[in-house]
Image (tube, rainbow, N blue to C red; front, side, top):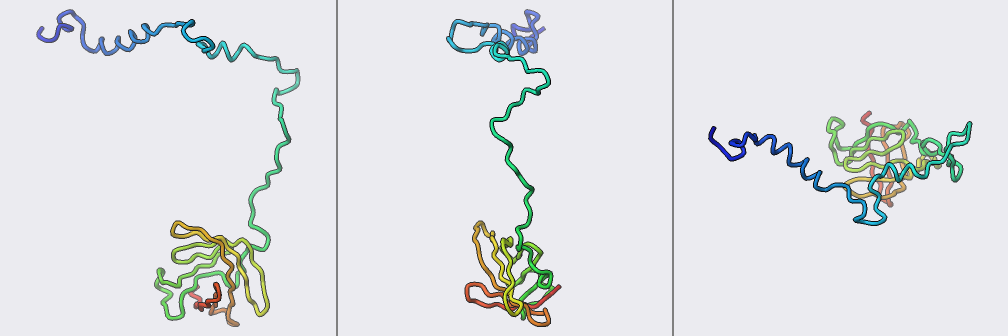
Length: 174
């Protein structure tokens, strides 16, 4: 049988691969005096301070009362009126084009523009059907807060949005 001295001695290479890690572990041994204060057996250290649980108790003691956590809900007055919900676009733009510059979708809780979205944080109604919306916006890696005033037309087919003194009128698509 030609090959390495390992094979000649009847020692296949696979046995060497298996035995090598075992030899390394055996060489490490259990040397308790090497590092004072070092726990060598975690189980023994952990169980040395076991206390009995009183009868009828579950052993759980709280340091302070649990906080009253209520499920998140839409803030009161943060629902956008159904009369202006839907899809809007610029007066000269086609409703068939879903990527127009003035594209706007209004849901009960948000204003979704082409490249940003504003979550309504407050909605109030003013004179002449005006609606003021405070929203927390995110888009293009940024976030900001904005107050918008929306003025729906008498027939509900047009919507004028005033943002920082600039007015933009859109037509209803759906």
